[in-house]
Amino acid sequence: MEKLRSFVKLKRKEFGLTQEDLAQNAGVGLNFIRDLEQGKKTLRLDKVNDVLALFGKEVGVTDKTDL
Image 1 (cartoon, rainbow, N blue to C red):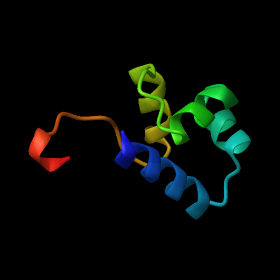
Image 2: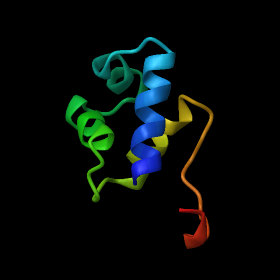
Image 3: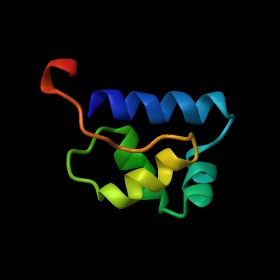
């Protein structure tokens, strides 16, 4: 979860977006972006993918050893 949290926050800042901007562009709520960037463990995967799609990414399967 730490990698995801850090990635989203870093990319948002690289693109010069506020949390509000990111939420609006991804079609999710501001609270969802805040929860995502704070590393909340239980998030809807479809919404995570909506956010990641803005950066050309999506959630995928990875080996535990890669964490």
